[in-house]
Structures are given as C-alpha cells and as structure tokens.
Image 1 (cartoon, rainbow, N blue to C red):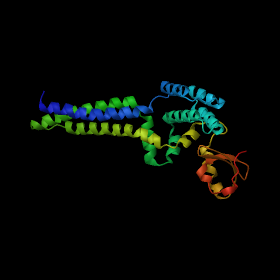
Image 2: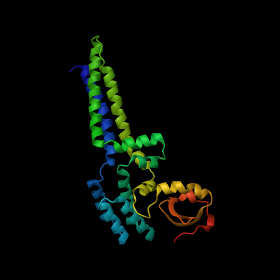
Image 3: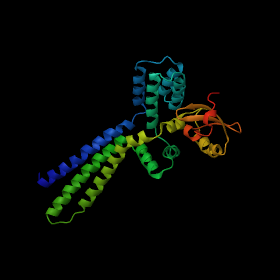
Image 4: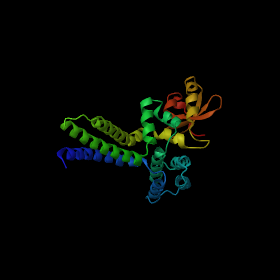
Length: 264
C-alpha cells in the first residue's frame, strides 16, 4: 500500500475517533423505553426510600410512561416532605427522562422562547436518531478519507480529480453531525425544567403556558389579587375576575409585596 493510501487511512481514523466519541456522548439522549425502566428501577432500589403514597404513585406513573402524572405526584410528595431525598432523586430521574422525550415544534418554540437559533438546534438534536447519525458520521468520514487519497494520488500523477471536493464535503458533513450530537446534551441541560414540566404535566392543576402568557399584561394592570401556591418556580394566582392560573413565580414577584397570601 502506497504512502498516500496509508495517509488517507490515517486521516479517516483521526476523524473516526472524535466522531465516535461524540456519538457516545449523545447516546444519553436515547431510551424512553427500557432505559427509562432501568432508571426507575434504580430509584426503587435507592436508599432511603419514601413512605409517601404520592411518591409510590409517582414511580408507578413513571413506570407506565405517564411522565406528566408522575411529576405532578412527586411534586405533591415534595410539598409534604421537602427534605425527602428519595423524592428529590425520583424527580431528578423523571425530569431527565421527560427532557429526552421528543417535543413538538410548538413545545420547542416555548422552550427556546422563539429564539430561531436555539429552536433550530433543539429541533435537530431531538429529531436526529443518534445511532443513525453515528453510522452516517463514520461512513462520511471514511468516504471522505478515501476520496482524499484518490485526489492526492491523482494530483501526484499530474491529473485532475474532483475527489478532493467530494472529500471536503463529506468531512464537513461528518463534522457537522459530530457537532450537533456533541452539543445535544448541553442543549438539553440548558432547557428550563419547569417549562418541560409544564409542557408534560396533564390535569387541571398543571401550569398552562398559554394562559400564563395571556394574563401577563393583566398582571401589570393590577389584576392580581393573591398568590395561592408556589411550586417548582410556578405560582398559582387568583385574578380580579376570579380566574386562577399558573404563571412563572418570577413574573409576579413585587406585585403584592408583603401582602402575598399563600395557601388556599
């Protein structure tokens, strides 16, 4: 094998290892199925355990795949026992799994605040199957290396070969995939857990993002009467017309001052 061919193989390997590492990092995005049950199993085996009925219900809901109901039950358990480490651990696991779930475009827009670049990156990192992307990265890196070898040989022999352009395109695409997959865990870490909870929880007591956006102007006009409850960065408030909605807690800070009423 010629020196140029060995050089091409070396170039392909130099691209292969970083790409494989990126795919390994992004592998954390996989697994709402068996991976979820494994995590829940770890929580069940954790010590100390909680005797709370809501805690047990939350784990069962998560085991059945109803993540929103699970979070709501665990949040209720934490309201009763704020220092319960088992409840905190269960919430951490369930919220992590909730982040991994595929989100619709509307949910992604809410999570990123409509910021185009953030939405684009979140959309790609959620929609791209990790295993498929890893194979594409390896294939593109290998094809790019082979085309690069061919281009170098053609140039050494005084010929003209477009393989160099093809090699460059393949390697750029491979590196783009690597960058997206490597950035995916960081993107998900930056997602506000409270917003994910609000998007995933179902039921009457769940925070309503659309209602929260609708009533914000009314809050500034003095429509807020009292704050009923606060949970995980969200405040349950009552408006002057009797309507009760969940809004971000920081959105109502300062409106009521020391006159805030907590609890119903």
